[in-house]
Length: 439
Image 1 (cartoon, rainbow, N blue to C red):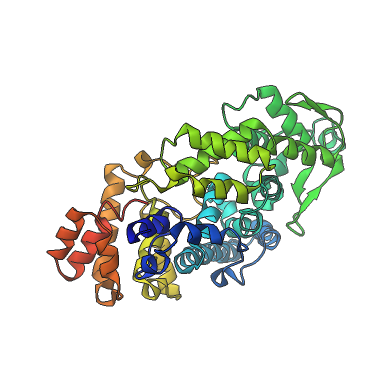
Image 2: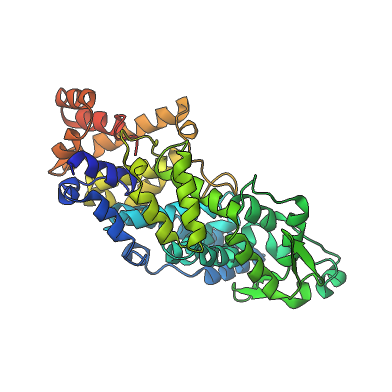
């Protein structure tokens, strides 16, 4: 192997290269990636101490009930500050991680099962959703992550299932309320089968009725199935009849998790994220086959991905999103940029917000786009360059030893440009280079 292959591993599968890191893994970059899959997706120390999803849901519900306007503003500001704090901590955790492949998988799956602060009520819940419904399952079974994500208070609130009531249920007849199909539609279109996965509007309605009664109890913020809100009677989803209360939803999620369309949809998204905007069909076929053969074992699917020769093609083809760019820069510059303080956390969060990708704030349930054109518009490029200049000016005196190893892995034009510059200009040219802007 070579240092160039090591840099590819660190950029494509990890979160960017720290000085000296390529040299440490150069003997076996693929082994370095694969070994991380056998390590549990433990909670990083940076994320310790944040409150659970149910507790944050309870506090958010309490804040909405406060009638005194000044007091209500104080409570809402506290909740929003908790979001900012965890967003910065998440970024620092990825920058400092000894298992950056796991962190990349956490970010990938969190985006797949998007809950977004585009609805402000989600801001206090988003970090807990990722900690509780995503991180524990990134090397587990897809069906377990699907279940955890669907039942989490953040998802039930974000996609309005707490407002979905069976019209013929006891509660529906008393309240005169009916179905909300948001969660059912996104489960089919975005989380499992995909938009071309073979479902119909009738399936959306059936799944919405199946999920009635899946709600959040305001007093505790926890998930609860409420039988009096559940639509009675049989429902037919993808040709299968469901009629059994809470178990209907559990069985439906297993059905969706094992569907051939889900296998292909997930395989295509993984291949697109790690290989190319238009991934090779042969890779998608292989990943989908492994998904089906292993009953959605994400460790097996991901291991198959890493072992594909197409995943090791060069040059780097994927454009780094702002989130990737900030984390890669923090890894490059080391502890100085990752230090924890209120001011440093604010700057990390502001960096992401200014470049248009504050954590957990995707514009829709579809999540952040994973294609180059989403991040290469004129305004986006200008923001990247302005940010790179700011970072270079601020951190040039604290560039760590070993930066020359990263420069050596860049292309000839970048090496020549950096070699002919000094100080902040040299660092800026590296951060703005094609090699650093891609993964």
